[in-house]
Image (cartoon, rainbow, N blue to C red; front, side, top):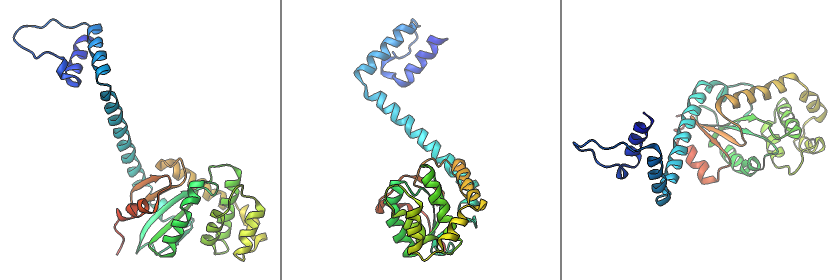
Length: 246
C-alpha cells in the first residue's frame, strides 16, 4: 500500500517521471526506487521545493487571514465601540474607523505616530486607541498615565506627547508631558492606581489575544488585521479598502 500511494503521489507531483499506463501490467517500483527518482528530480529541479514552500506559506497566510477576519467580526463591538477606549479624529459615523494596538516604547509605533496624528487632525479617520503595553514595566506605566490623563479630558495630546519621548520613559518625563498639557500631575498619579485603568489594559490584552495581535503596532481597519508599521502609501491603501460611512 505504501508503494502504491507513493506511486500515485509521484504521478501527481511528477507526472513526467511516471510511465503512461497501457494494457501491459507494469512492475511496481519499490519505495527506494521511487525515493531515488524523486531525489534525482529534485536535485535537477530545486525550484520545485521553493515553489512548494512558497505555496504552503501562502496557504498558511490565507488561513490566518481568514481566522483573523472571523475573530474581528465576532469582537467588533469590543474593538470599535468600547466606551472605555479613548478615541480621536472624526466622528465614527462619518469616517473610516482605525483601531490601533500600540506600546509607547515601540520604535515602529513612534515611527507611525506623526502619520496617525496627521490623519486624526485632518479628520479623515476615526481612531480607537488600544493601550497594549508589551515591552516591560515602563510601557505599563506610560499606558496607565495616558489612561489617567483621559480622566482630565486630554488623552490624544498626552498620547502624542508620550509617543514623542525617546529612550526610557520615566515618571519625570511623564510629569513634563503632563505639565506641557497643563494637567494636574498629582491627580494623574493618583488616577494611575485606579483599578479601572489596569482592568482596561487587561481587557485590551485579552482582546488582542482573541484576534491574533501579538506585536505592535497592529491595526484593525475594516475587517483586516495589519501588523507592523506602514508607510503613508500603504496606510492610504488600507484606508481606501474600507468604504467611509455616509
